[in-house]
Image 1 (cartoon, rainbow, N blue to C red):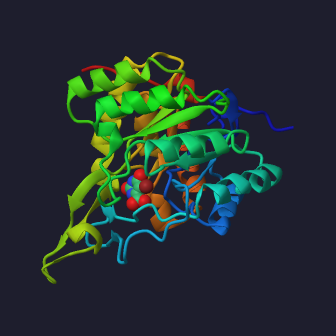
Image 2 (spheres, rainbow, N blue to C red):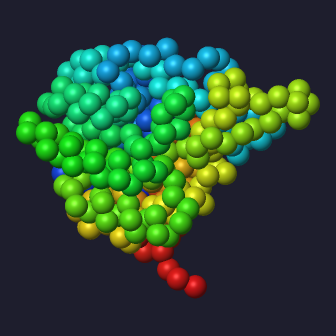
Length: 324
Ligand code: RRO
């Protein structure tokens, strides 16, 4: 009979708890990354992704912005840019997928919602009650022409949340997808707003809005919409993502989980997000580039790091970033 040593890989757990549920693997997809179509959602179900998270949805299906609207290059593998423009199949499709996905896969299904107005958001949230395990309300899409990111407007965010939490039938856990903040007073102000509500989690961060990547050979922007402006992702955003996780974790009440998202390519990146205080970690650009096999690889890498450091579970190091 083989004896399990305390630092064997089998005895290392990546279980996390979110929305009151134990989740087998604390690593899953970022909204927008390979999660728009039925096939993509099933692929996530079949993969090692801990959760199936949908593309942000609107009231009606949308084609999104003109192509090319996503760019990643071997010339600069540390950054991506996208201006998908909320291409999605409409909230009814993502609601219906809930029954299928829950019947087939033993993992939570979270629907990302990004209505084009307050009224749309309220209607979609009402209609999705009971059709998923949680909703991630996107306050930070940078790519819809003429629509500002609501998360940068503190009064508008307060107003939206007042109205969302007045929905009488609301009983599905609600999280928020945040834009990146860069000023400590903004963390203070936004945390004061979030702490007023029974919010289950926030996800930090969305892409860095309205970046510009230029191809100097062609003397052109690399994507078409908005004269080349789009959301920046990839390794380059990791320090901002970590700072947002850390700063919100310090300011939010302990019932609100913080999910890390931004610059996650390897097990080390996940380790850093969790040290900064993340309950779980999402993968965006790397998932698009590598496909769903990235989850198994990253999990393996994280377990190896934990083995070497003598950690058996995520709580052993979550939020334990030391000062110099
Ligand atoms: O669809 C998009 O262009 C998009 C969205 Br909704 C978002 O939240 N973040 C992003 O980088 N792209």
